[in-house]
Amino acid sequence: MNGQPDHPTGDDADHEEVAAQDDTVAEAANTEVVEDALTVAQAKADENWNKYLRTAAELENVRKRAARDVEKAHKFSLERIVADLLEVRDSLEMALSTGDQSTIENLREGNETTLKLLAAVMQRYGVEDIDPLGEPFDPNRHEAMTMQPSTDAEPDSVLTVFQKGYALNGRLLRPARVVVAAAPSKGAEKA
Image (tube, rainbow, N blue to C red; front, side, top):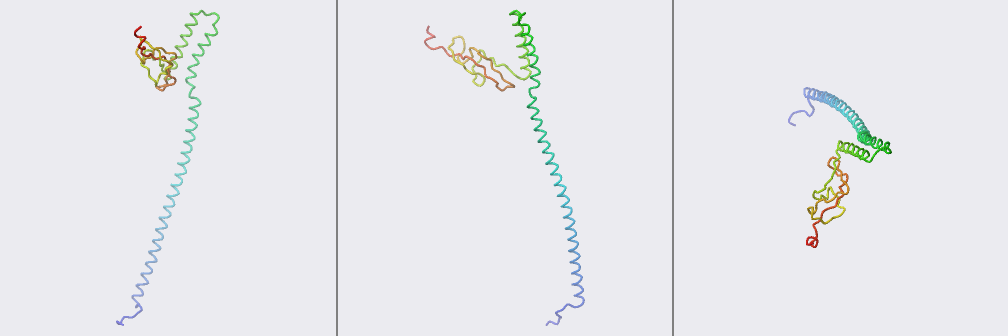
């Protein structure tokens, strides 16, 4: 109608054909780039998967080794203290073997020596005596067996120690069993 043909002319057809070929070449190049990127990504994914598997295996080995180490630590944790206590046992056995030939004084001396050995071993391992005679009563470290009125001691102080207490590296093993001083009753003060 406006004088132009509905079909493309020769130049236009050639131009469209070249454009179509360019699109095909571009698509092929784009596909190649995508395939290359996919290959690189797959290689990276495989590498990461292998790293994960190695790390998981290493973690499992560390866990097993730690479990074995803890088991050994529990099994042999007393080895050093038991070895040190053997000296105390030897001393006691020696005292018993000379029992018939010993005098009371010799037995007492042997017991004192053995007690010193035992105290030294316990101190080496962080065991401290709790001997609170005359100290204020501390319910965290002392166990009151009874209360006894006293004019010689401060109220709520330890009057007598039935049994020493012990702590291991600051942690209470056994409280000292004690008699606690109580204020004398009003009637006792007048007498």
